[in-house]
Length: 156
Image (cartoon, rainbow, N blue to C red; front, side, top):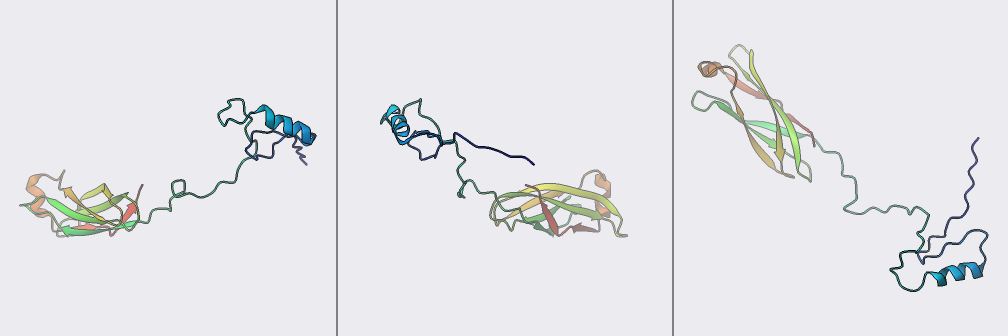
């Protein structure tokens, strides 16, 4: 068993006085008098209690981010070797989302997997252009479809 004894803590009234449990009224009054009336006295004693924190708009912990959504706008082609994806943010603050998509051939084989972090404004959308890279320009015509994971993970 642990027993703690507390002694010598002030009442925290903010007037600069420090009174112990053993102090008398005159000692407390003398302490008030010694700090003077000016609010800028550097020798004023500080309250030793911990105030209960109060919620304030600037100090609140933000709610966890909700995941967004990703929607394919257009797939890559020979004329335009990029897929365009729109990422939506359901949150009340700006966030960065990870979206994932794949470029597939006519047989369903994944030719390229593309993952990107996309910054999106609060309650807004952002367009991401995913380049067809790594398969060579001669193989872009082999892309039959693009698939986008509809869930965009909220990162930060």
